[in-house]
Amino acid sequence: AQVRLWRDLTPDWKALRIDGRHPTDPEYPLQESWSLVAELGYETAVAELLSVLRESLREDGVWITAVGDLMLARDLGVIIERGNLAYPFAATSHLLQAADLTIGNMESALGTLGQPAEKSYPFEAPPAAAEALALAGFDIISLANNHAMDFGPEALLEGLGLLHAQNLATIGAGPDAAAAYQPHFAEVDGLRLAFLGYVNVPVEGSTNFDVQTWTATANTPGLAWGEPEQILADVTAVAPQADLTIVILHSGWEYIEEPSEVQMVAAHAAIDGGADLVIGHHAHILQGIEFYNDGVIVYGLGNFAFDIDGPPETAVLNVWLNETGVHQLELIPAIIEDTGQPRPASPEEAVPILERVHFLTMLLNAGRK
Image 1 (cartoon, one colour):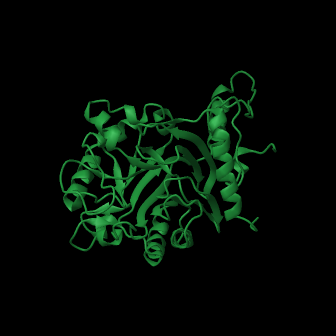
Image 2 (tube, one colour; image 1 turned 90 degrees about the vertical axis):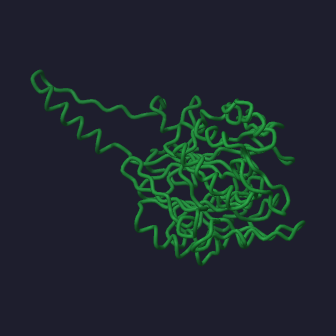
Image 3 (cartoon, one colour; image 1 turned 120 degrees about the horizontal axis):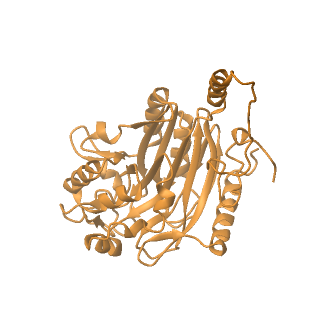
């Protein structure tokens, strides 16, 4: 442990919370105190000087929160349909609403239209799931995944409409290729951010279903397929238009902790093109974090709200960025209950989650300073 200024921290260091407070909290206890003393009659001049000083010390930046797969069908869908829209994120909404922008991956179709695709586990969440996401604090939803078109193009368009009606931005899918590959721009504290979403997953083994067939074309709805060359070209074109570029990537092998070669090449292409941060999912489990060139790759955030047989361990990712890129990272461990509802992990549950991600991260960055 070392004592360092918050502004000097880099993403390979972690700021410890003091009494549960992060350095960005207004009441964080370890802060410098500045004051000026002047004779009577100089109050106005001192106030103006303090204003200038406060502005010069202000640390511009943006706080992003991200989670893994959101699948609001099955038990969670039934609960939502019964009118309990808050239930899926009741235990974690306070973690999602604090950030400037919160991102999730909608791992299902959304609405009532369409017929299930001939593939394993087609999911369709009820229309009210869009409102549940907005209520929880989400701002940006990626639809670039292997379930977004489980009920066909009609359902995809219906889901896009439902999300947009709740003022939720979407990336990675659209009524045509231009919309699917279109970045979402947002401005926070004077910084302009660009978000892009892609999917690149293996052919489904049990049914031989190829998600790449869902790729959007010039005149058909679909998804943004994440060929590394495409990602590199897109990010290279978008990065000059923004101060920060974030890529959401759905890729890898399910239930395998090590990122696949395809997953790593795609993520590296994003950073090589100028992205500052890549956030991934698809494996249904947590994966490691790579510090690659001038960017950060969070390979897998696992599930978050998901009624599924599998490890319940997950995490909420907090990322602080400034004009130079990623400034700080933090994982808040969580546990997914049997109904699919996530909750913060207890201290005893949190330790092995963080230790495992740390171990996987060390393996990814072995040999690098």
